[in-house]
Amino acid sequence: MTSRRGTLIEDGARELRRVHGYRVQVIPPGLNKNQPPAHLVAERDSGEKRFIRIRKFSHLPSTVDMVMQKCGIDLSQFRKHIARHIGEAGYHYEIWIYSLTYGFRCFEVMRDSIREIPKRSLYRSVASHSGGAA
Image (cartoon, rainbow, N blue to C red):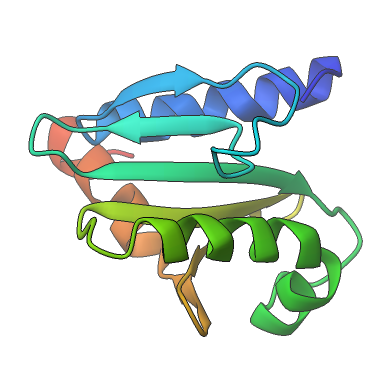
């Protein structure tokens, strides 16, 4: 993401992952065909790795159907990477949709489906780290 707003959105996503104990790496622009189309890669010492693609759709509802319709190229690239790394249990592929109204809505991409990641799982440890105030 290159715009100022895009950079602020990316910073917010990085901070959410850091609060949850991840080391976050920003992937520079440009597509490496051996890697999924991620803006961020978040890793934990346990080997868990999350590839996160961030999209901004201010005027569209963030649903599984919308992700399937508007993020088709990202989905196919994620699924190619999933197929090549089928034995990597700790890999997760996520598309994070940002809107001014709703903030982040996150979706996990799997081999043959997409599911929304509940917001409470994204923000739960923020409250535990801050004594209950998120």
